[in-house]
Length: 185
Image (tube, rainbow, N blue to C red; front, side):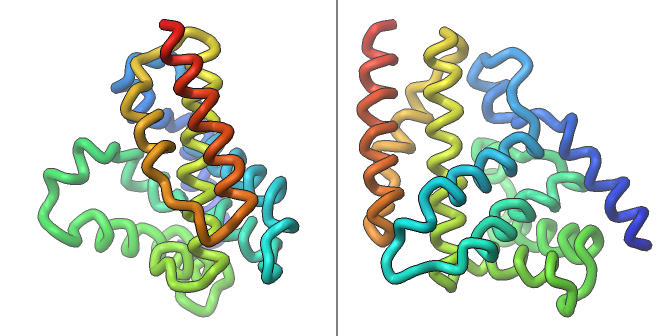
């Protein structure tokens, strides 16, 4: 696949809706691309307050490419992926990442692999930003009166961000705001 072909294929992320929101009854939910941008914005807004310091630019790159395989695979919600054989989703994502982002010596492929493995502090940070963006989006939808969001709220409550104090502070704020908003319904 040429670089042009890869980039054209990745354009699908612009219009690919996040399936979990559709299943929760949210009409016209955010796209996968909008989610990736939101995750990167959470990282930019919080990473400079993490101690010891993170490589913020690397964190942002991890956030941007983390869902790239969905351009080929679609956005598979947790409810569907749990029905697949063990390791099937991960193997498919890895294959799609190689096809879309190039071989292991390419920066985009390296960042995706780093995110998928979740071993570095930057990858763990980006993964937490991914979950927190889900909470932010849930709060936005709750404020708009959209969808059944109790499971999303519970996910924020159960999220462990203790390794990164700014993310833990954001998680606590989100959790309280979601609970308050959902209790009003």
